Amino acid sequence: MGAAALGTKLLQEVKEEGLNEAKLLHTLRSVYEDRQRHVHTGQANVDELLNAFASSHQHHLGRDFTSVQHNAVRHQQRLVLELIGATPCSGKTQLLYHLVGLSLLPTKYEDVSLGGNGAVVILFDLRTRFSVSRLKKVMVTHVQSQCGKSSETFSRDAVESMVRNSLDHLHVFRPQTSLSLLATLSNLQSYLFNTASHVSANRSVGSIILHDVDAFLWQDRLEDAEDQTHGTTAPQNAGLLSSRFRDMVNHVRRIQASFSCLVIATSSALSTTSHTRIEGHTVPVLKSHLPNSWRSFVTVRLIVQRDSVRKFPLGISAKEAAAEAGQRREAVEKSIFSARLDWSESDVWREETRGVLKAMDDVGDFPFRITASGVDFDVRNHPIDDAETFIETKSCLGISEAARSQYALAAFQNCVQLIYERESNDTQPLHGKIARTIASRFADIASNKKYRNRLVELVHENEVFREELLLAQLDKNA
View (cartoon, rainbow, N blue to C red):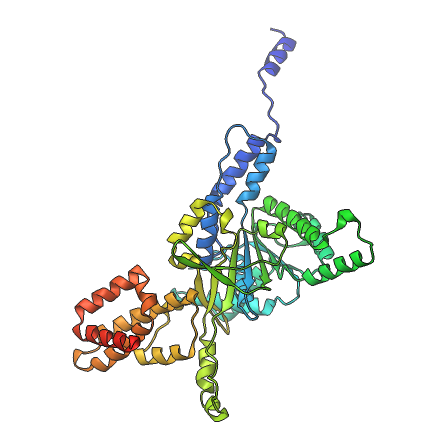
């Protein structure tokens, strides 16, 4: 066989495949996304909520699909978390510091697990209120807390050096108008792919943050109204606010699809939170003031607020108020914040997602505390020295429905422990205090199967407590 004939035969055996084939690209992306199937922010409560939605968005494509369908499914798989401050000083920014810190911190420091992602964070600080110094403090505190749980010890200088290295991968942009925000978003991918412009080339993008996404709301509304008043807005350009939000969503969606990252936004509510009953659960509903394009883009909306602290009663004198100032200050410092899942868009949730949420404790709601050095989510494990301390503390604190059952569990478990630890000959006064405390929160305890079963066991095992609880219930109902 001649050389020409051999070459012709070999060429006939070659099968060409293009890299732009949708199936090949989908296969490559699937290999990557199978490792990314579970969302990990490092905060267990937030992860549980996001994964409830992520699991229902995992679609597997069939053999026959178009590139348009492929893109639509990719967009469905992306998660967007919005933290909505229901009131001023709601705690949403402090919660954001914690999430940003975990995204930046490495998974491990030496042999200590930090629970971080070691990722890049792109943050748009739209009201220029994000404090990097506060973020650093939160991160240092978290690292020291994790080191304290192990046998490893590190100097503060070593910890701060590691935190500073992590902060190198926080990229903060502060556009002053919605147009400058759109311009920054349109050029963001070019910036990230230009490895000479930053030191984060070897890290994946963990999250895109839109802090105060509603910052330009009134500015754009005013501009829209002025244009319409002077007749300078063409009919096709009406609705300036909606169009700019739509453009922003399209930019963020493209960036998110390119980097497979989480989007987190914060905003402030303009309306009050209402509640509704859904299959036996009382859940919050909050009407959003942002355009439809944004509301349909968000996957999970968390309503964040500070639980109210009881005000001074009417008629109290200045002297009496001054005498209680120390206790009240302590009550404010110990007050609890709540993050509650907003159910206003629940009609578009998949049935699988709704089922997962209903199976969670408190349908995904969780309490937390804000301290001088960070955010504390371990609310239910705070020690209560005795029943009397608990009663005095609770008399100063107002607890919302979201946090009440969590705190009731902590109180109840500590009360049970006290009963078993004390000698039987001196427990009757203590039993009475505990019984009155439980009677005051009886509805919360009895509505939860775990609490109720524990209470039934205690009543059967302890005759003195059974009698005191009965008397306390009778006094309450009298």
